[in-house]
Length: 291
Image 1: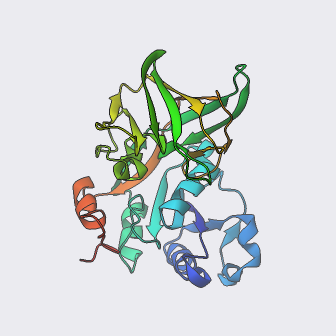
Image 2: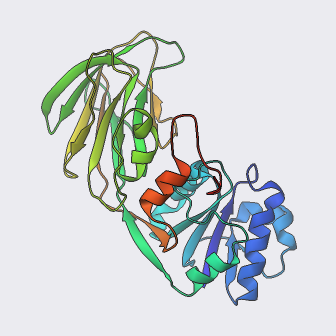
């Protein structure tokens, strides 16, 4: 088996985990492959490690936190290869391997003792007032419209399948997949949704209203967010990446992407066990599954 490995050196200091993983794989007759840009790092000292494209790999491994995992998926999603994360971040909800040493969990992957979860993605397109496409992106977690650097409220209009739902003032809005239900949507008061479900979630962020609710949509729905009024330029962020500044009367269109992302699920912990261990009461969390 060939394993593509990407490590975030700000989390994996000195590429310690990356080098350890490479040696484990080599000992088991597998080939570790790193991006060409890693050839100038200390990883080059691992005899047998390769540097180059992930196109011929069977699995792609991300070493870092959830942000690293999302970045790796953004970079390599077109390869249609299963992803798995090794957590070196804080909460690491999306990363499957959290216990160290990692050899036993790597053995499960090599032996094929895992499930594949097909995760829904979102396609987001930004149009100007004349209907011209300004930017587009794909995200696994969510896409959010956020107020800019100045703390002024936004006026937004929400449409679903061409039907106007509501106007509201607030800090923004987040549209999420089931995978993203444990991220910004959760903080915005949205529901927890198991990642195997096929739905879309829409949650206003701090709306100025006496009532607030999220929307759970059919996966074939198209969401439109119209920007009606603001004093500073807000931003669109798919999976935390800034897509670009917005202008008044711009329209953001969001729908389910035609392709899913494949992630590896080891049969060691369930979804709600992860919720209990990693996301608990306000102001608290567990690190690496330890109470």
